[in-house]
Image 1 (cartoon, one colour):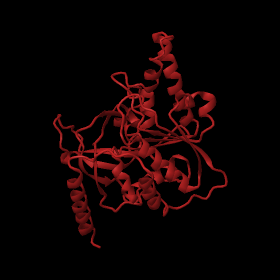
Image 2 (cartoon, rainbow, N blue to C red):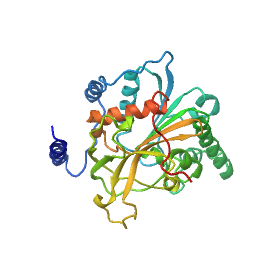
Image 3 (cartoon, rainbow, N blue to C red):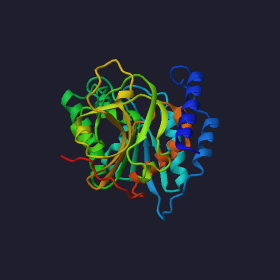
Image 4 (spheres, rainbow, N blue to C red):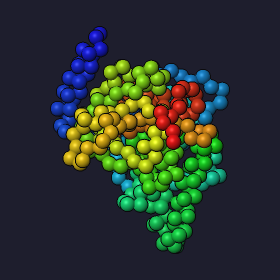
Length: 309
């Protein structure tokens, strides 16, 4: 099928779907029927040949904005990881998994919409701030220690995957931003986006058509370490197509997914998606599977930064 015709039909299908759901996708409860649908799409993904499974932590605690799709995202990544045959999986919302003696047991961590709260934007501080037995400095010190445990985890050779709002977890920390490739700045309202591929030949985006794909989501904008471009971008959006009320940034594009090396470790970030309905796209599921395998060290590919200061 001609690529332009194929893309037009995709747009038409998505527009019809949007009319059914209105201006935005509506939350729905995670159930076995939906999980079975995801499993049927993931089942065709390739298995990973490995003698020893890697230990994977999927962490889904939030203290700030609660994405309704957190349980769906957790289920999706668990299904993808199980199907690969490469992981022993732990699901957790217990912050103590980041204590040094516990985090060291894992090989890869997925941060699932781990949004922090308020102006401080520090998930660990949010947790310790509820402890009245601690003074202000003790709260800060304890929070920094857990954050540093994650940073050292990756720097020493482990893998980290951040999904959508997870980039907000330690949003004001420059050290965390250096590791992840950026921090959250703001997003215009949810809208229809044309997600494009930076390099259609890159193996991590092999599931997508070369024209990219139509996607309904929050167009995330970033700050802090983002502007160092110390990452290999995978997906982007064109800013002149974005509907927004704030002053339009001078950039012509925004990257919304990337990979990077940090120390001896690997990081994968994907802004898509805020909505669980997006996971009904098998091409996006395969992309997330590729991202997980990259973070775990099962896929070697070009992850050199486009610009490193």
